[in-house]
Length: 396
Picture 1: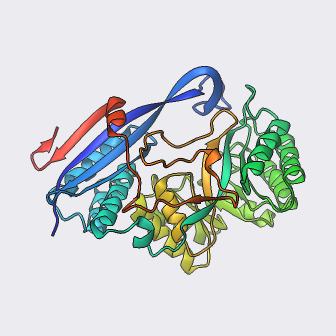
Picture 2 (picture 1 turned 120 degrees about the horizontal axis):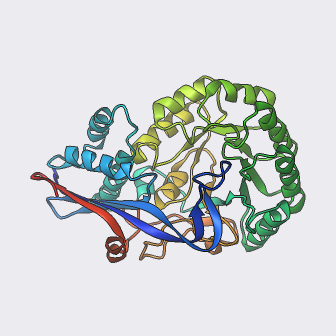
Picture 3 (picture 1 turned 90 degrees about the vertical axis):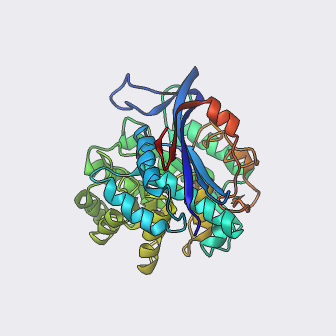
């Protein structure tokens, strides 16, 4: 038995040069937008689990909202004084405790526990999961198109993707312009295929910009004709309605990818079984950590359904390396002015910068124990907004 002695939770920010969350337009309200010379602030969360026998499991990444930190504190209070190896028991207890809200905080605590397990057993997360790949095929995924000079036209999009293709990238996904102009979107789809060639893996994620099912079908048919790998989240409000997406699937002969915004394994299973999607999305930051992601992945694999892991992170490289089906690792969201979408918090050389791609279009899976990365704790603490330490005596 190895008991948890304390849990540290650090909420911190990091500068995002040349990008801001903007609210001056209804079309893009709240979205990150290219703004030369500005410096935005992006929220992050770190969880460090310390055991009585001297082990530490840790995980840090972008966090969806400040609420995730407070949820993580509650989960930590359940964890302290208990055996860290009982991850499923913690998972069961924490999910019930969090009702009726979704427990994003559990995701970060669970990821830290898997890091702890790898360090305790002397194995990487890939090895714990039974994976065999030491490199994963990757695709570059853009920020939303803008009107400020960064991916502002189809010409700029294909020029940027062409540069990445020369560097070794084999897959490319465009996030649409915020206006949802079906004619512009369809022309861009056609041009991507013409310029990047028949062997490029291409995808489109409009990021929920189309109010009309008709417009979504129109653009989806352009993707179909251009032999795109999949078509993802085209419909407002946030891609969570099964009925409208079943209509979309019925109208198209191309895989539809949904459930990025449908958190948790049970809801994803219902969405798939009800006919709302062909492929599933999973994210270890939204979908209850590695434990919750594995539940979705195993369910999907039993039905022969591919799971695509959403966004970059070292944990996601391990998940892709362990999937039975062929998946691609997403490096999102990049632009000509934003080459590395992951936090700049690592001391081990880990990076998702587009310049790190190999000639064969793959990226390495961290090989160290657990998640396999090390963090700049001094930098993280310097950028801290809030910190909590949870022990048997309470929260400090």
